[in-house]
Image (cartoon, rainbow over all chains, first blue to last red; front, side, top):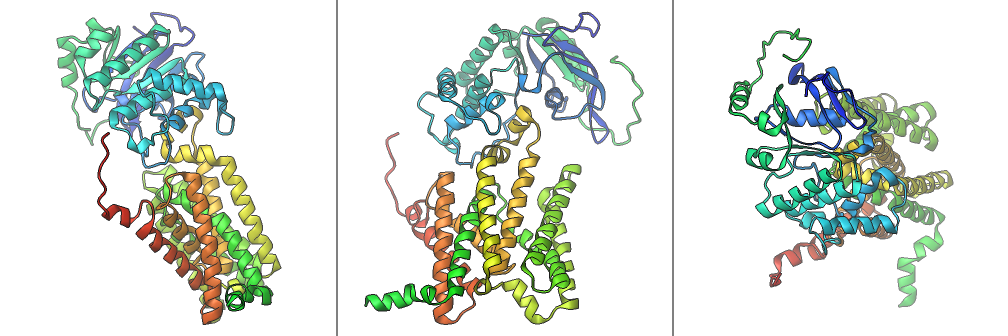
Length: 256
Length: 291
């Protein structure tokens, strides 16, 4: 999707010539395009390609050095973000139900009450991710897969229009992946925008209509079959993983 | 028999107003400091209290130089110095890549050196001892009011910021994604730590103030996994330590601050040994369950 092909739609997330840097070195370099409302997109690319950085920039956790990200009619609370290996301190004495209840933050905030309906919604979400009966278990007692299911339940409760998932299937067994994929399909069916960083190309081909191939710069973005091509893989592999400490100042104005 | 027990356990407090005030001071400290200690432990900041207790020294010293041994002057000085160190270290951390503990270490060491220098230029060895070791037996009405106010404010503020403070500790990225930075709650909490240390510092001295904050908190974690439970147990242990420490100090003619903290230490060691998550159960072989 080229930047000017479609006029901005409500709920669209539009990247315009986005560059995000660490210590002046670009991690995402002149990326333009748009995530349409209701689209289901996989972001793929080698390690160090800037996939997580791009997600963080979309949520607003990282400043955009150049260009802009338009979140058309989206408030920050419309975006649910599940970081890679969530930065949870699992030593906290918090129960699974309490974790999932945090999904109500948008409505209850830091001080508000979460009523009976809120608790019922959290229980329903736990059922949906297959963690029924785990309500009172402590977070520390969960396996990695169960913890990820619980976090998905929290995303369910968040009921956000846009859902960003950073490598959500890392270190999970096949059954957990299948269950969580089904949830993503359900979100897609509910017209939510879902963006997930993934490494498994087969899985992406099978379940994701759209893909964004990133290697710091944009390699390709569009229908999955046009993105995950051999040529694009080759192009991505050419991306140098290490920074050039003596790199010159970049004068590019637009994506190549 | 009963009379002997009364003389030993209650007599000192019935007879001497200063002992009663000291006891109330300990109870107030127990109510405020112990829950703060529990949250510090949870946030992996157990040693932070220690650093902060040194950071308040220069402020207290300046207060002392300006107004002599005046409680308000020393308290305000201590609170200002503590907040300056906490904010400076926090701001430096957020503005650079340096870790917070490193910045705290740097700032509190500067403050400590400054404080000791200030005291040595103007004070005597007695003053230094007084500031380092405090005097719970010299707590007057004004100090009691301060301690009571600090305990009340601490409990109310902790109740108010309980949810965001915990979430900021255990899942900061989530908090950031739903409502922006949780730094505000972090700083409010640091402020509470400082205020409580200054309160403890009146009674127990700068070296011992941390004792009543961290030891009961560490002990409580051996009894319960629940957070509110930990806070209650910690407050109870702290209050008991205050009572036992004052008795020991009275009967054996020992300094009160260290006596109180020694009892808190005993509370910790006993909990470590026989607590529900302590060594005894750790060593005793228990059969595992079926599922």
